[in-house]
Amino acid sequence: MTAEIFVGAYIIDILIGDPRWCPHPVVIMGKGISYLERVIRTCFSRGHLKAGGVILWFVVVLITYFVTWGIVAVSLRLHFLLGTAAMVLLASLTLATRSLYQESRLVMDHLNAGHIEEARRSLSMIVGRDTANLDEAGILRAVIETVSENLSDGIVAPMFYLAVGGLPLAMTYKAVNTLDSMVGYKDAKYIDIGCFSAKTDDVLNWVPARITGFIIVIASFILRFNWRDSWRIMRRDGRNHPSPNSGIPEAAVAGALGIQLGGKISYFRKIACKPTIGDRLKETDKKDVKKAWAIMFTSSLLMAVICIITLWIIKE
Image (cartoon, rainbow, N blue to C red; front, side, top):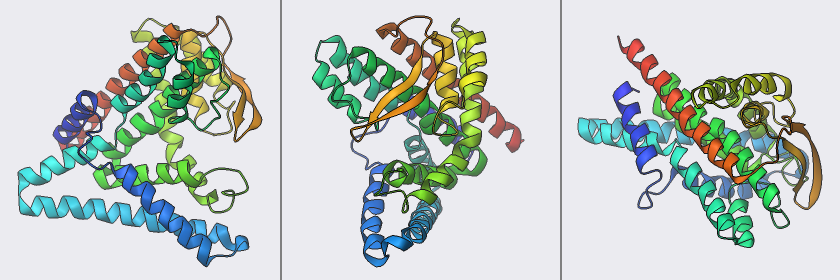
């Protein structure tokens, strides 16, 4: 991975996002994971599904890594410009700045138009919780939480792995993240087959989540939000989450905006009482979502600059 390819990928992600004409790797991964899950459930008894989940993980990860490496190698052998274009496009597809904004913006557009049912349906496409009975305040909190969490998973972490290990490693990270989102649940159906996927996703996100937290504090300072509370709440409430990583960026954003996240959330029609994150200095409103977007874009740019400078230094 060179700094020039990283710059090209970042620009495409910001300006275009995920082009509709190009099959997204995550969609392809998802179809492959669904097929392999069915195969493993057929081949393994319930008592051996944890072992099956390990095999599922290794098959998906190894195929993703070597297919990505092969595409780059073959395209570069055919022509340098073709290989460069392929790397820029594929690298841009590991990033999700624009798509995260567009998906959360769609929820807000419906909410602003007074179409709360449409807002709930759009929200259900980007969060794992039940959305059917959420009021406006619940929708706003859910949007801010998913923007905060995915700032790490969908933006900072892929950039981190692009800079550390190039395109194959970044695409492999996306595979691990997709595995976690599809089978990494703690319900009866997935508790065994998804155990290994969930644990490895936690490991791969540990460093990026903490980088994200620090960057959010810096972004809050630049945007003249409450960066001191962003730092304080991140340190105090960063562990107030079932995930060892998701609470870090959520706490940093909550502190910057002076709002409270977490609390009672419904998953699969069961109420989960999560610890609260942040101090409720004010009620959450629509302006807070715009501020969360500002933090997201500013943090994305800051991480991109850090990665580009790092890649230039390594090149020298």
